Length: 482
Figure 1 (cartoon, rainbow, N blue to C red):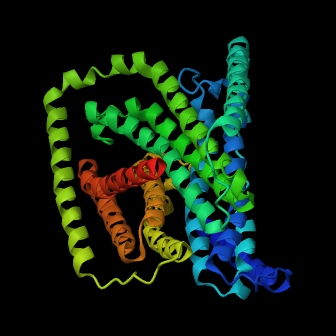
Figure 2 (figure 1 turned 30 degrees about the vertical axis):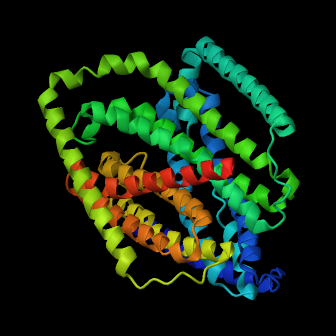
């Protein structure tokens, strides 16, 4: 434990010294970035650079899968090989969330001359880690033929999907009647991109629904004591993979928006549409494969039908109570809290307020990371591979993953809602972000005390987000037909 603390202390001191040295030495001139839109563009470019850390971590997982029987994540029998790379990837995604919201927050409050801190902080986000996977890869020699067949099948699917996606994109770009030549200003282009990313983010809602559907129909509704957690293993993998892919997709679209001209912006809705369709195909293909296995294992519901019914009734009751409390809190806050936003007539100003509010919401992720770190720092789980106590961080890790997924949907909902609100209505953003943070605190406390008590906090974050999604969807459809 003292050794770990000394490493953390040394890393913090080194990072601080490097930041100060680079800040004073590097010839980065940002004095001309006075407009909010220019500062956001500058930040998005460097966030794209730091998002490469997620790409590196993703390649780490794919490298292991591509060289072992873990290429088949369900029946390959080698999923343990990807455990460490997957942890690295999840940790990188969680850290990037905080990194992104922190830099966007800084972009709204720093003076132009101080914005050179952003590229320095973004460059420091690159994460490199390695794990000793070669020890366990002997399974490749045990079943070399089968592995080669599986790998050849995966390669064929990748080549086919690239061909189909490329053809669909080219035909859509040439023939779909999407007119974006009027989007000459960057705020207008960003507004279109945010709306398109909102559509793409429905892939995450599908993943959340897949997990919730299994939990709601089996004893996996109790994730700790239900004895059926294996049933949500594959839906959870789909959800994690979709979240990771959406992160890269989002940063690519936002950065592409900075460089495209108005007439070329039609590529954004096409790419977002291709992403959503591809994720639907991905989820349906994996769940179709799993269908027979799931049906066999769901017999646990018949074995203990009464207990499952009681658990489900308890969760539904909690959700109804939380909906009533959240709705009342929202209405009273909107009517009586002295929040004045009528002066925010320009989109960059409204986006600046939303980013600041999302920064506050992101403290929920810091709480989740702290919960995991607290357990690791006081048990043998401090060594996540050889400590033999990884079960101790199971619940804190679930809380952190769920909070990360929920924050992503919350973020897309708030950014898209900002596009459609006028200045006087922008007070809903800080209210919704405040409700999200409080509900996540309730979720974490409830989950840690009893897993079934998590429904209070979950409903108070997920259902308001779904309500915003429905509203924004109606707004987008209305714009398409008008």
